[in-house]
Length: 69
Image (cartoon, rainbow, N blue to C red; front, side, top):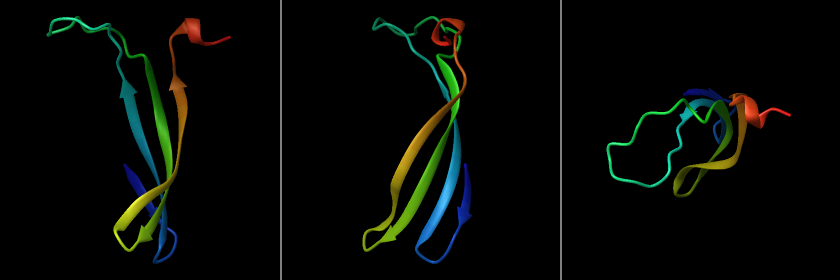
């Protein structure tokens, strides 16, 4: 996670995620290749209740071949 302050009430950040997927079953499940690897681009805002995510967007970096058209 990288956070970039913009001012006293706003910041933006980038988080990296590796997503795995498997059908329901008894654990431990067989490890499969990641379903996706990507980045969350977030905008944060300071509220009376603390820092909150104002906006979040996911950008896929790597996906399985059948997802690419």
